[in-house]
Length: 438
Image (cartoon, rainbow, N blue to C red):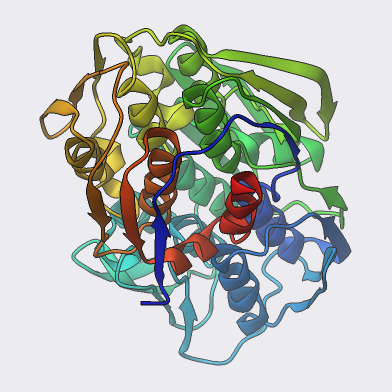
């Protein structure tokens, strides 16, 4: 029972200022690249979530010296192909698809078999999207029908490749990019639009990368086997975590919120663009650039009326982790909202498209769902006066947090299971929520 969060009262009007924890994508990418650098790299505001801790633990097993304290993380990099490890080690990626898929790319040169495992949720997710291109480099990879566990044995002389990444998966693209660092010659990637944190970090580190930006695809060219110098990084706040409080403000009456030092990379702010189209008052202020990333303070005000949306598919990849919370806002819109081409949602920690529909149905909102789309019949007058129980069998952190926001915004008596799931991405979520309730 201690793992259940109970809510039975909607939130009162608020005016808050917050600094949210560090960006998960950048925390993991910094750690992986720092492990390949030469010398000591330090990060401030690194996210201390289970996914990031799993990353650090995997790197320690590969011989990397790491020190983590309250404010900083220090990594003593071993250089390209510098990992030192025993035969037949096992790396546990936990719940992290980012870690699991990216670290395989760094093992393209491994001398011994290395086994990658994960938790129940990660073991259900697709790894064929990285296995296929990494085999082209020459690595020997065995998997469970394209899923974990995966066993990789690298090759002494990996070959540069040409590859078309057609899913819009930043994880797949980045895994290939990391493999290319460990490969002599030039690797070419034609990648469907997705998050570009890795490209920005490569450029910041002066690695030989060329990117030609297109409307739907980017062309990426990387020369491998170049040294990485140690680097320091102050990680900005995570827009995916901020999105829960943006939505809560939009759905609440007479409320205002300022979120400081947020990563507003253009490949990540689909949630901001979409909610603005729906009538939410969102403003980016004090915009500046930090080591390639765009940072801003986000100002949000309650929305008096919310408009339905036929969501542009081109925004999907820039808000793939925020759809559940966007569905929640659509539940209060005055009309029918339509979201399509969402098959990638079901490649996350749980089948999130189904979960999004299920939560709304329990709230009393009508939906029509297919394998890759959803129609949401909004009700601007929705108030919940019943008991609702949410129990995600895969313990999806975003299902849990979305349910908490729904309870605060719409009322009702909620029992939301698996509160420890937030440790995956946002350990301080409930602490912030409890502060909002005061």
